[in-house]
Image (spheres, rainbow, N blue to C red):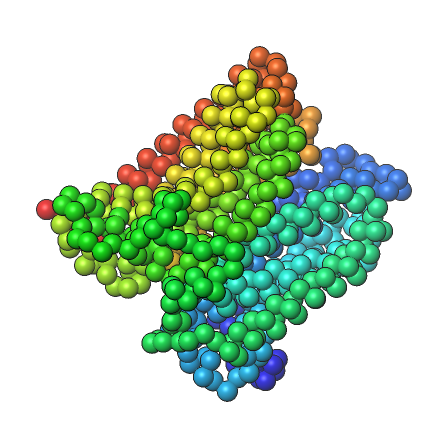
Length: 542
């Protein structure tokens, strides 16, 4: 019942592996890794492989770090909806009433979620084998690295499935999964780069990483199985009963008080009076009922995890070593990238899923008021949560005298975060208008944001590592204006890495100006397209 005759596993495998998306994703994944190896291949016409193969070893390490980052980003998308998908499809109650053991259900979901990702990882083996003739790595070294990589993938999948058992929506499960997985992945990358001994790396990948991963996976597996064995109260259509008073009593650490400051900035109390004349009913519904209709567990976890991670980064990057301030700004941007889309990616798709979009479009509310109501509601929550992490930057301006002469740079940091909040909310709302399902809209939003924010940074890093002597590499520095990470890194400060060269400072401010202009232009374009779609595609103009 666990492996061979597990109907949950068989059904999930058939659905996941036979879809066109599986073949498209396999092609894109292999194509991306193949391009990485192709462009990073040593450019010399003759190599001496007897000297240790330093270039080949760097290429193999980059290949595995690239796969590690990709799997960390992709694992939640496969696993975070394993159980929440049953709840959204209204089949959760029937699954719990089946004769299957809870552990068999969890094992089937976990294996089915990770099989597709495992196929992607092992399909890259022929590509890395092309690098073995360059020297520096043996076949057994590669196999050992794959063992460590797959152990990490299993751990990431277990975290996603465990989060999926706690939440009712895939979007909430996905965000919390990313908040837990990305810090682990980052710590793994930093720890790996701090070790220069190849033999020690291999031993850690073969013995330490699988051992730690197995321990974490078993704990999460039994915890998730226990939740299915003793589930919360289930009401109509398999929905868990939400009692806000009981949830507040059981909350550990943080309780959202919607009638007190500062909680009411992002979680206003439910309306008990009539709506004033001229008010936007769409905005009032979204901010008071829609966003928090599924409880505040996800919101509390997001605040707790983000603040816990922010404390050491804040102390190190803002107060002890101010020259590393862009790293803290990057952390704030990553937080908004993860949380911002959650509150906007389902704004319109939820209306479709409830079959209320036609009713909304037949009212006298204009498309402009519908869109800005949904946009501001989601933007308000995400921006206030992000500001909780941004206020230490303003506090540093008072406590650290190095910032006193760099106030323009601090203002630029704050501007980058605010513009990022607007961009993530706008992209999420645009995907919600275009797509029909909230889960698809959210994943498309994350993909577009990664293309805008992460890909330029990766291209610049790759070019500086393997094409440092080329003229094109110098021009790529200015081509990263779509990324807030690069814009924050390029902000000139008197104590940073850029120095006081006038030409360098002017070039850095140009990158920041291009980022502001591009982001505002993109947001205006997306808003115009959404209004046009509402007027022409879903609404009959009169």
